[in-house]
Amino acid sequence: MSLSRTWGRKRFYKNALAQKSEDGYSVHLDHRSLRTPLRKPFVVPTEGLAVAVAQEWGVQGTIIQQPLMHLTALCNTVIDQPTNRPKDEVIGHILSSLSTDTLCYHADEPDDLVLMQQREWGPILEWFNGRFNLALSSTTSLFQLSSVDQKSLKPLATYLSQLSPWALTGLEHCVDCSKSVVLSVALFEGRLDAEEAANLALLETRHQTQRWGSVEWQHDIEAQDLKSRMAATQLVASLS
Image (cartoon, rainbow, N blue to C red; front, top):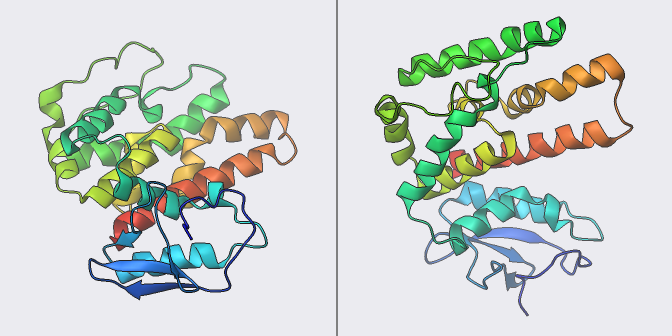
């Protein structure tokens, strides 16, 4: 029986366990080995990561909520490599995302939002610049940072090249969901935790809810989902 297609299925197992395998660590649902969407054996490099994935399966209720299983999804992506991109291309995508980083684009009004962005985003951007010897600055123009000097990105590119395939995939996913290279790297470097990083990524949403109130459930769900996704990316990196 294949365990690669369980989207919305009823739970069909009692226990989810991590086990040592020939090439690393696998996850077993009762006596069946987990497989990826492309039917490859689900094997991760460390016991810690396998245990975390097994726990993700273990806490499922009557229905398997696979869209919320971010650890499993990230591991599947690394194993299956559905886009089949070389490492340099992934790094290039992350570097190109820096020119549209959320933390570099500030509002020019209202005043309370401007101050909020300066107070909360400013220190993280300053840390990032110091960490990678960059000179990124905030702007209210959508065009000022359209081109970043590639030579200045060498320290950041070197940092990315030293990440494992697991960590690099996690970081790219974090960048895509947070719209920020700065926040993603700060999370991976331990400068921020997942809750702090998600809150900063959703700063403008927080400002709107403070001013106008929140849409019932919607904003809380959005915040929790982003926090979960970012936490999963950092966990994959730290445990791989």
